Length: 104
Image 1 (tube, rainbow, N blue to C red):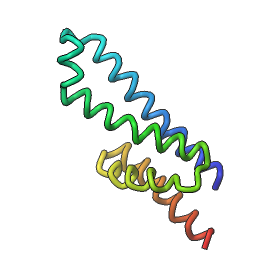
Image 2 (image 1 turned 90 degrees about the vertical axis):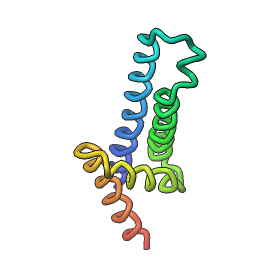
Image 3 (image 1 turned 180 degrees about the horizontal axis):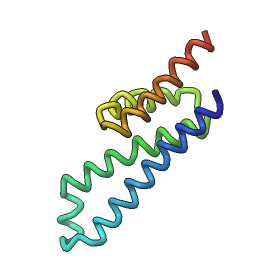
């Protein structure tokens, strides 16, 4: 099960990094001033999406005891991002239930 935890942690951390790079590239190519872009809902939504993915990845890779507090809600919400999010969210839910059954 440790292998699956590392795979899912790398996926979540990688998604957070990809979102961060895409946000930085769109910010750099934006013709707006910094004051206008910080207040823009697009960038705020991007930052709000990046933080949970990075937190989930770090908590799984660091093998934190309460990593499921971050990862479980993200995985459930990620199920609605068809098709990639459904696969990744389902993979984490499978891992979570498999791990909780073996711990009991």
